[in-house]
Image (cartoon, rainbow, N blue to C red; front, side):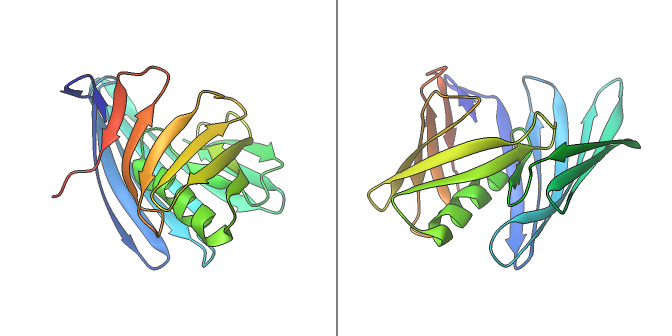
Length: 178
């Protein structure tokens, strides 16, 4: 993720059938986040585990699982439940790979516009993401909490190739070869 010409966040991840894991370093918040997600056949994240570490602060470990119509979040032994999470796609802060998973799932669902519930592991509640496809290689998305549109360049399978935010306009995400 770039803010102007400066790298604000760098991420690496690996994806396999049924599993997604990665790590990102957030230079703005001065933290490192590792994550591991279990994926259902339809692309939903069924379990998401994250660990946040920052210099001088104890690591925070969170596990999100779905049960019935709720999401259960265990953050360092503190349990909370978020109702209305049936079919929600789990996201975690700056993890672009999880956002990419959202787009891959939206591609599978089909249609010109896809709406689906999303849940950030921080537990702000279930939101609705709207994704409108613009041709075969682009999409625009917004959520009920963040109505500003964000533009995505995507592959036919839904893989993120680039992101441009409209608010603030100086932030963009660029995919680079490893």
